[in-house]
Length: 411
Image (cartoon, rainbow, N blue to C red; front, side, top):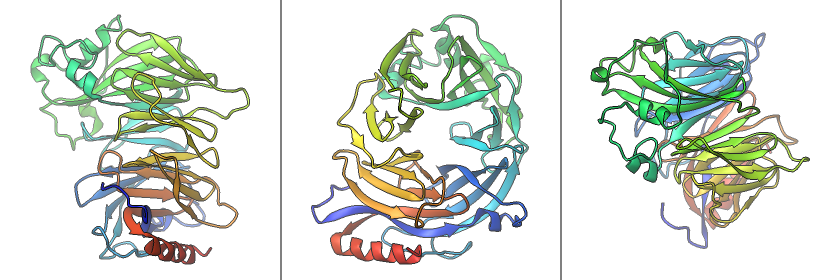
């Protein structure tokens, strides 16, 4: 993205709205509330949006963003020609809230956390969900973000090629000591059957931290159901109270009510980063995929750290303690009570604010296609979804766009 000139700024330009309940054919007798979001760039021209509800459903929508520079279209109806949002299908996980949704692009699966349990689904929600029963009372999930230094050394920084002797999970878990446990949700595989795709996931719950490799062998179609996935895992006992997590390379940042800790998957050593004041809220953090860093929150103050736990740049001071956080190139976006603010990471300057209703409307969630270009931003109020795209505008265009946004939102 080119640098901003003094008279220009990046703005989020809304181009479509989506009503999940109406699209899914739900009646007012069974109100739908949005509790989680995930945005996945399936291709250059198609984005998938996963919407988790308070009643245990996942709604999948397909997004066809307009070309860069196109005029915004507020209230865009499903199936419109430009900036279209199309309802694909829904899946039921249970009757409890969908807490988080994670797309595992390497293996073509979706990992869902609901009511303390983890579930695997295929990308298009065509097959029944598969419950991962080896861990209960799950409080946090983190997907491993490969870092350059870790990639050059292998999963544990041991410098051994994946093709040598041990599988990635064996090398990964042997470094921590103990045995490797294989969960039986998929066929047991031999090294000769490897060559498929895999990803690493960390999950916290029941006084332990579980590190796992999810593997789809080369002989398995990625569109098959979750029974084609094998899980290799390592349990680390006596780690309790984790409510937030991020995994960068060979380090996992753990957030508890006491503060933030850096756990090394290379040697199993935990190093305190900083404590939370007694009066502060719960720990919140956000993995920044683009820069391979983590944003840690202490109420309304954000601190960015790298995989070594070292601060990067200055602090970000928000006007409130965010309910939800996401990123786009060079920017951080936060939301709370029907308000969204866009901050430049380098300067900490707020360059755009959008209010979705007077007086606030409850929890407001934001997500971006952070595994892609980071240009598509999805904001959800409890009942509706608005989709925006980052655009570079000069001062006059910004004022006109802000006025149009307020008019369209009834402000």
